[in-house]
Length: 201
Ligand code: AMP
Image (cartoon, rainbow, N blue to C red; front, side, top):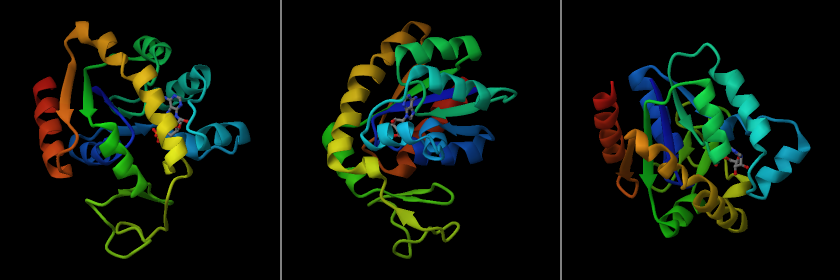
């Protein structure tokens, strides 16, 4: 089963994907996490500024990642129509779940977000780490992403509305789109996602 999580930055895609992966034995593919490991200076700079990376580069990356896999939760991909069309050539999509959040709430969440350098676990105001600056799971160091600073956040939200949100219309005719209120608690969102996924299975 392949599921796409669509949602603005800060809507909790990564957090929910981590939880879903454990429950349903799927792999979690976050193109953002994959890209953060790159040593390519141009990509690093584009990310820092909150710009999207070229479709060609992303499609190549996702092709490699999905090859031989049975089921995945896609987090942060596709982000453009071109990417969605390319994905249809690579695999079958069973469900698209939109995590809906206002820009105001997204901004508030992102400015307080910290990520583990090691295992990528995300902490926020709702789920702070027990020890300041250290990951609960692996004791890795927590940091604020460069692109979680106000200027880059604004650019990323604009890119989401202009390039990614229209994908909901792309998938709608297939009747596989579900919308979840992402302003709720992590627990409540997770319960809603599980309900949707179990109906898809
Ligand atoms: P994320 O962690 O999903 O917010 O992604 C962080 C950054 O990685 C984005 O702001 C883009 O610069 C880049 N990125 C991640 N996924 C994609 C994608 N599917 N297409 C283009 N750029 C991407």
